Image (tube, rainbow, N blue to C red):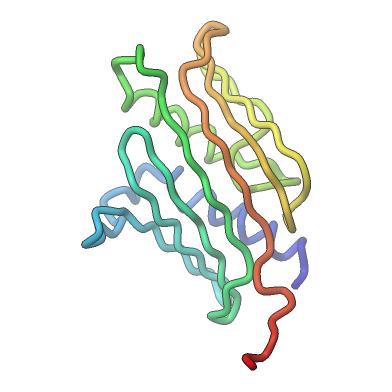
Length: 160
């Protein structure tokens, strides 16, 4: 699998996934009380399935020609002292609409609007990474999430 092609797909999918506030009504509510956001572009597709609410957790799985090739898991929450949780997640959507070109799996390394600042740090690359994102209001952390992921099933073995 070509890492650059995967990055291009993830960068495009980020703008049409959770970050796309206009498509929120199209998200699928599942019987298990989770929500799934689906995105397809040619041979590429992704299912972003999450639980929550507050806090939240989920996973993204990218498929190429119907085969799973990449995934990420994530978990995050807003600080308990913050009353307007929806405003924090709305800001998070704005940040995630601007993915980093080197690792387009969450938002950019830094993003600012008014008194809010989003920051993301990570180790590794698209094939295997761990990271953390946070939102600060006037220097005070009001949200944090961790994420980890990378290529899956790159060395499939035939069943015994």
